[in-house]
Image (cartoon, rainbow, N blue to C red; front, side):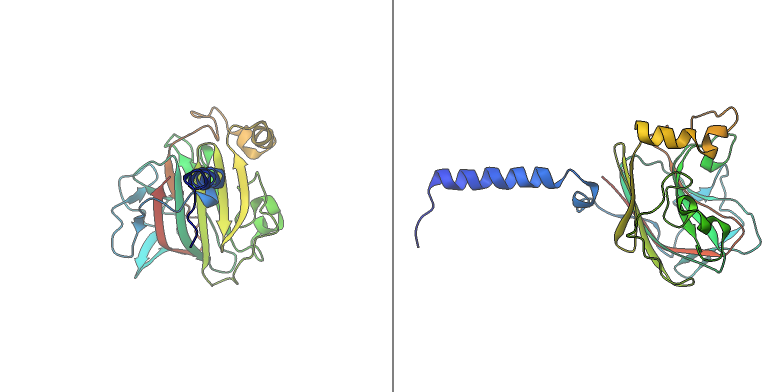
Length: 237
């Protein structure tokens, strides 16, 4: 077998390193490292509490390995005790007919609701809930700001959807069932223009301007309609 010259080996190594760096310009190609932490593993809710509360919300219950939003009750949103900045959040969700919930992130506890500060990935029955008529408020959207793209494919109501939220610096992504459906840049002129035209611009006397938080809690919303979450885990990026 012919020997490879040292200079050739060096060039191959440099090319490989360059390709690796190029491949890490997008979140979906950079998220293979880092240990996962279970936020809910079906056994313990120690990582969670209510929004603006030290207790586990009354409107939720644990059913085996599933977190269940109870119908007809408004017991409060469920929130991580810890705050996160750069992360990948992975979870599964399913809704009842007409069900509505959402995962809000970069949340700071203020006198207002959780959505007054954090971005939301919508969880919804698009076919039966009114929000499903508007792409910007449909399942997977950056709620009220950016509609999911054509990659979005939901499972039938009552079946589990896989979802993930990726945040790396100012860059954010929403994924549903293995497909990226939303991406945005926090603080960009484009996103600022969308916020200025949305309901978030009408929040009165905000303690923290909407969308400005860099590190915050993660919220699982309770709207009084049945929704289920499982396999909730997170890792730092």
